[in-house]
Image (tube, rainbow, N blue to C red):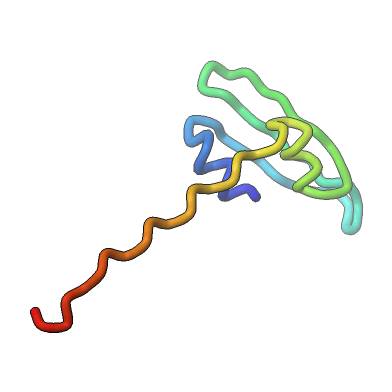
Length: 71
């Protein structure tokens, strides 16, 4: 999920960590102007959903152009 967030928001700096093994995950987001916000939840996905909402699905890859076997 973090790769998708980085793809959609390349201007943000993102930190993901947990201080206790098996404990909650903390996600912190830093904007270019210095604003910092975050969320703490049992999973990374819950944190990202709380911060960014549902992420749009990636575009499917374009089909490969047909090749001519006689070229």
